[in-house]
Length: 211
Image (tube, rainbow, N blue to C red):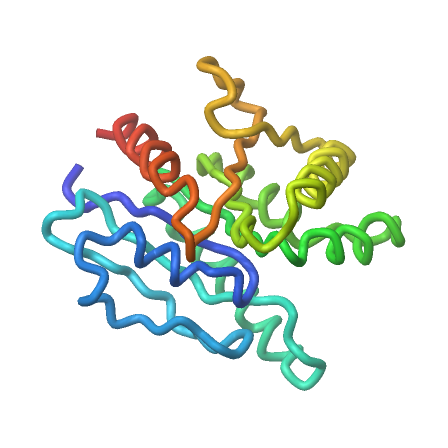
């Protein structure tokens, strides 16, 4: 393999993609990317590469949760992301779909439980990546912000709602043999580095399959 394979990081605006990216870099201080404080503030498709890192990281621009005046800009971003993945999907050995755990319940209520004509953006994105057979891991970021009771309830809601769209979400490393149709998820906190070791292990295992 002449060119380094890439790790894809994707998700809505302000879910913590840049923070997670930093945690995966050998020299985080040299990373020039900025954590966006406003939804949609990251516009460029960045390819991050270090000599000592065996793969590149592509942190795609965030989308979703913009105000009405930014709808046209949001649609432009989504279109560019679709074009990018369609063109470069074979370069990605693994993808991280990052979710803000605090928003999951609201998204499912608005686009699934209270409507039968829409599909939650999270599930639409997962289905899109699966079409191109890009292995993926769903990152439930900001898990530290909720109680144990709410965590279990929201995860249960997420799993059950995903089944309605033919998506089978299972906890990462819950068993040794993984069915291709199963989609692993990982409880995570970028701030507290919760399960960072498991995240790195999952990435390395996927990378070894293309080596």
